Length: 364
Image (tube, rainbow, N blue to C red):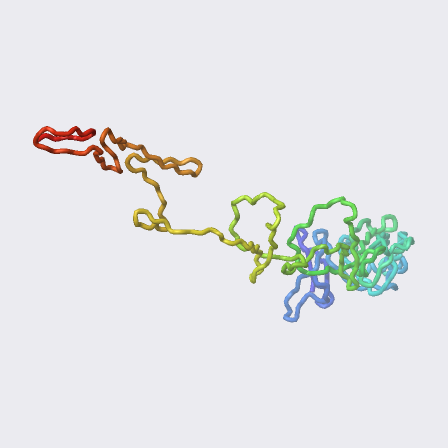
């Protein structure tokens, strides 16, 4: 298989290979064909510069001297079939063991082709820096050709810039950067509180022993879970009614014999039993032979020569006396409504022969 790139007027041969198994797919596996001989996604970083991904494993014996590193770089160029240093940009190596990359930086000639190389690399992480010119890689770390320059001659050697990726972090600790696990994979939909500078509210993130991040907040649960209230224990009650009371409460008083305990009925509703006795006596009212009904109102009606008035609940009934008072005159007596004469009454045909005092004579 030969992979080519169009340069605008013709195809440049970039990667002459006769076996697909010698290529690497984007997933890092050998070969770019799947089991059905379909082409898998190829990994082509920086292809715009002509770089085609080259992946291989390296061990300590490949990079611990300047000559070995020069030979390694030269071998990538030969494998990619290009004399252009740009063609190897993006190639990467995976450490198959812990190793140190010689980083002296002097111009070194590759033995097989006579090309000259210089290079520099940075530590994949601060914790690997041992203070020497060598770069330490751990098993699984990546060494990537990230930049290239020069012409490959003794006066202008090709300069390779290696990038490194720490791909093998250990568990994070208080002093070493590392990897962690989340306490839960459930996404948190509640927005975080705003950042504050409130004192005594900052707590360290720790490892719970399973590599999961946890924060121990030493709060004390001061909430009390209440059951139903009793005479000796605070608790919960229900209202006797949900209807809001619009009548204002009476003022607090210290009247003796007027304080009653709050109790619960069988439904746990708060009630107050007030032991009052109904001492009111109700009698029927009859007027003119008619008894007033429960919804009727007793009304006083003034009769002839009678007047009725009310003041502060007192009803006054008064009348005007229109009767004539008589008195008995001379020779009369009055008993009740009957007059009676007190003089004797004489009736005769001729003049009386005798003189009678205080007598009434009728001559007929």
